[in-house]
Length: 153
Image (cartoon, rainbow, N blue to C red; front, side):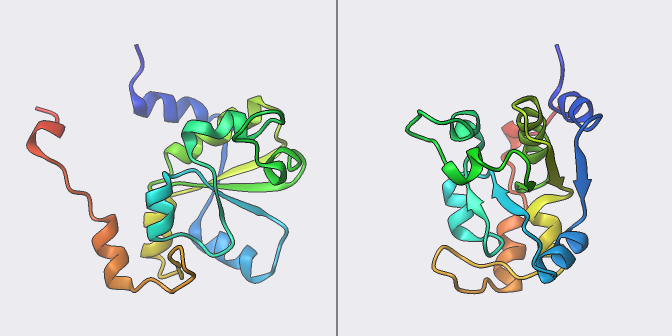
C-alpha cells in the first residue's frame, strides 16, 4: 500500500514543476502554454488564473481523448504543446501531469505549490465572471479547515 505522499513522490520522478513566479513570467511573455486547472468546478469558479481551462481531475483521461462526452478538443490536440497543470496545492496537478505523460503528452509540467502558492506570490486571480479576487478573499479561501475526525491521531 502507498500513501498519497508516496504517490506524489513517485510521480515527481518524471514530472517537472514550475514555480508561480516563473509561470507569471511566462504568462507576461505571452507564451503559448495551455493552463489546465484540474480542480473541481466550484474551486475554479471561486478563483483561477485568467486564461486557464477547467478539466476536473476526475474526468481528465476522457477529456484528453476524442469520442467521449467529456472530450476537450483543445486538450486532445495539445500533446506537443506546453501544458501547465494547476490545482490547489500542487499535488493533484503532479498526479494529473504524470497521467498525461503516460497518455503521450510531451511537455506537461505542474505548478509547484498550486493556487495557494500563486496566491502567496500575490499573483492575480479571477472568479468565474472575470472579476479580480481580493487578496483577503484568497487567503480565506486557501486557509485549510479540518474537522477533528479528518486529522491524524
